Image (cartoon, rainbow, N blue to C red; front, side, top):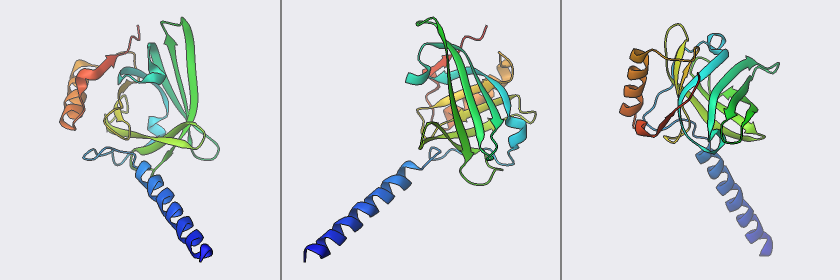
Length: 179
């Protein structure tokens, strides 16, 4: 009788763990679509952060950049850099990203801490891969990125409208000092 309950308990724990895993695997907010016909090779390289929703890893950061390059295993190396203007020091973090599905859809997972991944979704990108709008797995994470330290007002306006229409509270954006 005890073995029966042990097996049932183990099954419930395993099922719960699996459900928790799949629930946390969601990498894009409901109603948001990642860019299709995405070209990974064009996205690689250096990006300047124009604006972001602030969170603890980027708190008090200016001059923030992200550099993407290929790892030997096909994942993408992510190198984020910035300057903490309150601590008066440069900071960086290195991680890796991988596609959630096929590489033609800009829906990825990124990890800076071992086995823990978070969503990284390109919501919009121009045809020349110079400007991008990126969100996380929920509406708490949003970035405007540019290949230059500035972004044209028209692109900025279009991306902000897209983000607002997708349910993001764009009043929470922190504009990154790049100059």
